[in-house]
Image (tube, rainbow, N blue to C red; front, side, top):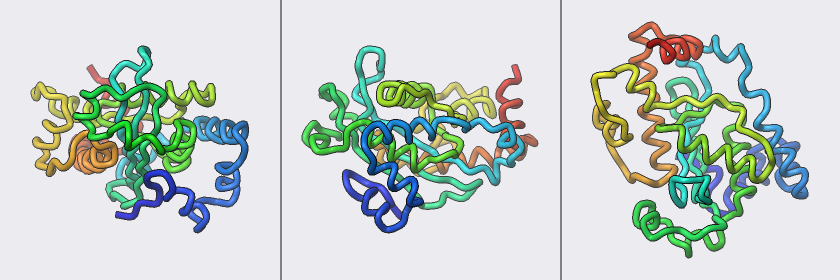
Length: 244
């Protein structure tokens, strides 16, 4: 799969090669105040009403996952890595973004064991603002998708507020919530369990990009199941999820 952004340098090479418009490229290389303004601009206007009428089979999404130093952002835990996959309708495009992120706090040993991310690996990783602006530029105005999205959405929103004093304006869908709504009799939540239900191979877990890739396959499968229930558009999906 094509990786236009990876690690600490690939993204900027992609920019120089024409991966984004000159306006965005210049903003990303601009002084800090402009960097902040650029990220803020990407958090606005992402809930356009017309998006509700788009069929899920045509909806442009970005399936993402974060690895973090822990599970409690209000106690100082921070983002360790971003992983994202672009999906156009039911087609996984192959365009991905992955980057480590240097946290201000230490990485607990249990997180090192879980993710494989060591303090040495993030020593030269981009700071939060840089990794965040790369992530936001990559996802652009797409609808975001995550499995168990409350965790990822909260950390992303806190990171945006911390760096730019902006809040996440994107629509966020949760594959766990959708899967549970489709099959409420199954008392499961984890990505591993739902991948098994849909007979999706389980690869490297607790790696942001690999988890995002597997979640993208799950999202594609869920679109088919939703279509069987006459859930066609994004608006239909919201209505389906709101039913008691």
